[in-house]
Length: 508
Image (cartoon, rainbow, N blue to C red; front, top):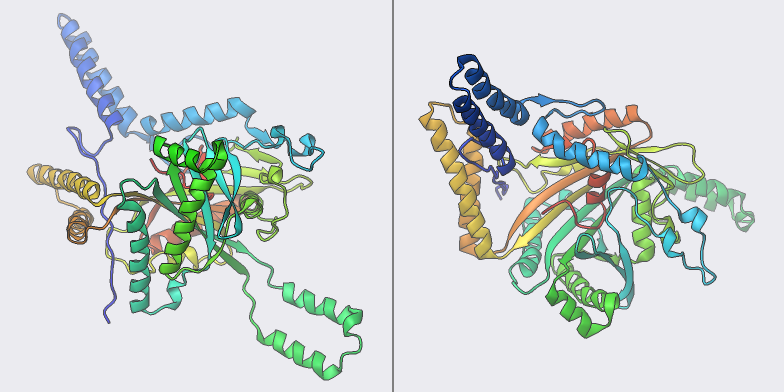
């Protein structure tokens, strides 16, 4: 069987001034208009007219095109693109002085053992959350309401899809079944779940844990009278078993916008937040069924303990992700420091060492054909890197997806036509991307499947800034091997970090 390949289109907005977004086009257009007006206003003086004409235009060109790199960052962007990021960073510093301190330790607990509201605050970069417990198939789950973001989320933990261990035919079948899952949610106009996030969390496990267990067993009184041949046979078996220094966890998150329809359905099932949680439990049960249809084995829904453990492990990898007894008030570490532009530092209570995290955005998906396992270099190709990879898909019905494809294809064709008129060579990668966009539209029109806008983020963690920089280089290299182009989100790592939590954020 021939290897099946997949192509990603390339969205490139176009306009009178080229491949710029609307804000950049406004800056360039305003510069030109102001320059012309000043030139006309000082038309009596040649020198002033020339200066008035040229200065606004040059200033607009510098703002939109001239790249520079602020201190403490690794990316070179234009002044226009840094402006919004700098504004966010200044506000973050003004809110907390750059260091958020968890109030959980001082707040304590109530008499009934629950944390007070003062202890349930979120660090910089995360919108306010309300956790509402519910039940799905007899198991406890938690629904996260985010009023500021106007959304509701819930998540399932699943076993590894294991694409790398399947042959080509099985990989294609697995992806087709996943496509059917997305189609079930995206092609229904009335369904409130229009966003699905896949999370792959990789962390270091302890390769010597088994050996320590053997040592403790030998010292235990329970094994004192065991025959020597039994001890020897167990030692031989332990030596024959290979232990991995990396542990993988996989999650699927569903996201629903808080709309009138969702509120009405929630009110029919209960009052207030409990009704919304009951409605989301129905959708989580549907996701569970469809995940099983897609040959994904569900471990359990994320309840309060599992959610707390995941979030705490993301910020503080020293905390074991399987330790689900941590109170919700301690889901976040003691300190979250956002003062450094190139990373966000976190420190747990009682610890003198910090963890440093950085998040990158996938700015370019493969423009050349790739196989089903094209993400393997990032998922399993970095055994010494603690990381979380997030892919969020915004679903849309087939007719809207085809309309969006037509708009993108029109932009691509117009851009290439303009390059031909200028006598400019057309980048072959652009031709491949334009062809992929067109073929995707044909596939959508022929199959009637739902469409999806896709974004990706990857967060890495390290014990020091030096190790983090080395890990950044490794991650960028593996991303290139996966035919991806990533960009580190300097000065906004705290906000970007939340995109790799089970909250399905990071996409408009």
